[in-house]
Image (cartoon, rainbow, N blue to C red; front, side):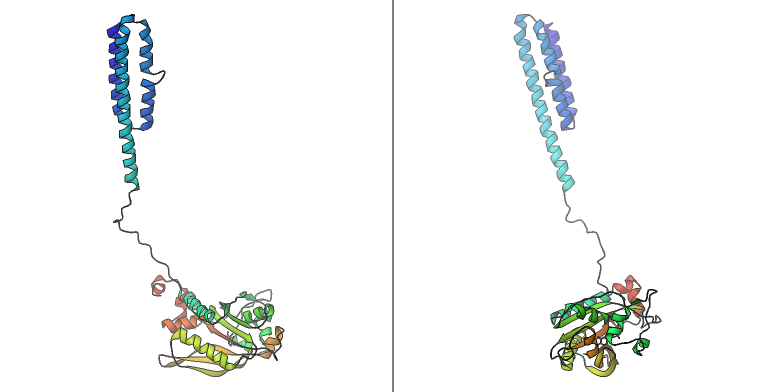
Length: 330
Ligand code: DAH
């Protein structure tokens, strides 16, 4: 009886130690602890039968049981330490950052030449105290023509071939319409710069597009002079193109009087770069300003034209073709 129980205890120890050494997760290890040393575990069950032993044998078996229990506790503890260390090691390896690994190449985006010219021009005027303004691309005849001193039978309407919409509205042919919209809701003094998209029924070729961009300038105040206009334009063109010769040439626009076109000497040739003039009194009257009190100047220019001059482009259509070989050069 004694030796039988003793043998069972030793067999239990051997089996348990094998199982503990073979276990590879902490969860499984805990299951083994419960199985062998738990309240209803194998060791308890074996000791339960100790009651049947003769009194004098009990201390010996009790001592063996204690040895087995202590040995198993030690094995469990040793295995737990080993598994925890392995777990931390695995986590460290998974989280290691190899700073010597080559990076992943991602091509960098660039600003389109049209946007970059708009950004630069707006920055220059904002630096002179101007505020950015905008208006709708679908316009009424009133804002695009009539309020800009261009009545229905005015020859200037032939100069600009217009996209009319079925409802009688139109796609704005210039950003000058923003002048009217802004003056209608604001009071002088006014200094605005208004970039935007405009539309014309031009035949598309190397220098014409049906959709392009303009930047409009408007200043209204008391006592402004043509000299203020010239100084502003000169300061702007110098920052945009560098210190090149410019000249003002008398011209005609319905919404300015007098009107001028500005030429810039670029690579030895005079290039026309913008239209401008003193705001016509009829335009001021249209928005309810007293032309005896207020006077203003205005200017407008094409963004694509600036881009073509600055970047020496041969064809306006390249700017809309989304050809990366072209766009990557900027
Ligand atoms: N709106 C004119 C155009 O599209 C450009 C222009 C000329 C704007 C003279 C102005 C100006 O403000 O004063 O051709």
